[in-house]
Length: 299
Image 1 (cartoon, rainbow, N blue to C red):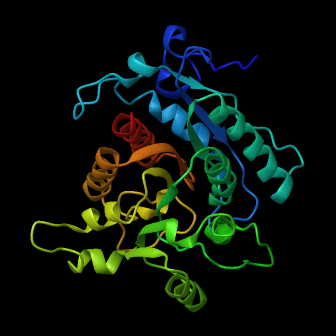
Image 2 (cartoon, rainbow, N blue to C red):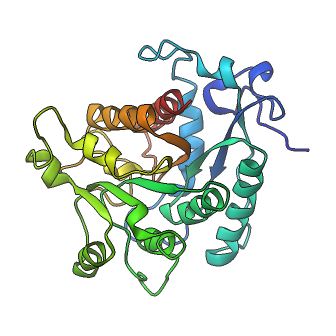
């Protein structure tokens, strides 16, 4: 029997009536995994920070005019315990847990943790959803074959995804940091990458069409979203290990997510790479509000 966290510890601070596992459509899975971070640290504290900040997020969404938790129920599971597990063993634990949840027809929201966790979550969804594409919000391509000698690095997560998913099914948004080999991989394998500088310069803005319309066109029917929090500009999201200037802002992100949800079927998502900073609350709240927004759009 799967037990959910109580009102004092769960996402949004939801009473038992709407947060029991058996009766909830949505499952929030905290994954405090941190093993390959390469600059700033603290992603293992991200899930807990998001859960705590979420209790400052209103139940009612002013945009969609809904209280989503009453419609579907949102259960929050206990954080995964990795003990001495790392790399393959850690990713297998994540895969098995998510696969079970999706197989039980739950809508899974995964909270990281470093970005390396997403390959397992995506693999579990790809096993159960046909015609799946991945929408990656990120400052980095994460397509290195390996990084610092580890092929399971957070900098290699999308390279691992491309081993089981057609690279042409990967759509990247907000990219602004990559090595030459990653740029070549994108070119040679048909990955759809919407660079931040191109979005800023109006490269995709045409008559009656905006950049996010082109993003939607590249996505298949079923969409999994992986959201590295460093996709946001550091001015609104400083609490991440590898911040990059010229990032996305709140309205740009939500506008894109809204269009994707309206025209495609979002099957699950993750929010990763929040590294909480002591005394800096707005970053945690922004991450928690993002989770709430995506849920409102997706469901």
